[in-house]
Length: 293
Image (tube, rainbow, N blue to C red; front, side, top):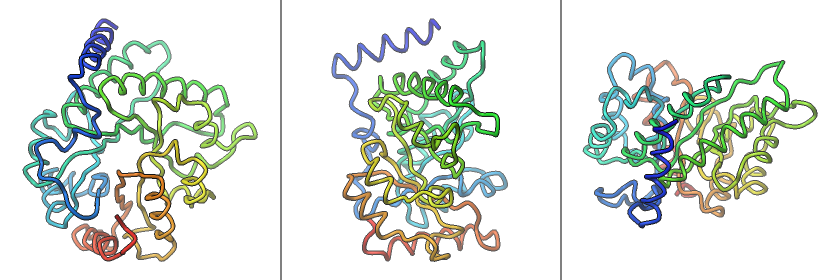
């Protein structure tokens, strides 16, 4: 708790003194301004390559393919893919990219609230140093026994994390899968989450594929809930555009209308397990599409 109090006190003083800028304005400081389309990638897409060849090989592939921004999916005790935050940031920047978002999660543990929140202080500090604009909670435990009270506890938890992250200009959010479009106690889970978080400090990263798979309409969500969605996962069955199941044009049109800047490709599974070919195919589909920004 002492570390947490110190962190909040320090963050408050910095903010009051104007010594920190919102992370979404400063995350690319020191980099040459990127031109053209945003072209972000969730590094979870390359998890098998990372496991076999290491994160540096994966990031070199991402950079060579043409992606400009990365969203991480690895954090452990102050380290990001095994690197100190400043070193990871440097390696990303040296490849001509920036780390603008991160998936980081720690489940609620009854009786260990102070310990859990202290863990979050460390995670927030690390990703502030990396320069991330977003810190995304990637999933939550939901099963047949989950109640509305359970969901409310997580909303309160998200609010507390979001408040901490906001102290250093990082936008905290939650990333959906398909199961949040199921019902609990007569209410759709995703609607419940959106209705019970503090909108000032908790936003959402909409995964358009899982939204559609769960029975939702991505464009409808972007239209009706646009003020709560500030990042997007662009996803298909496999490579982007291959299945023709996802209609990305109206999705990007509404994203642009909403002013959403940060979006990331995520490939769950590459055809023939060929990450090099699959990543290139996904990139080229989006690069050629005139509606992508």
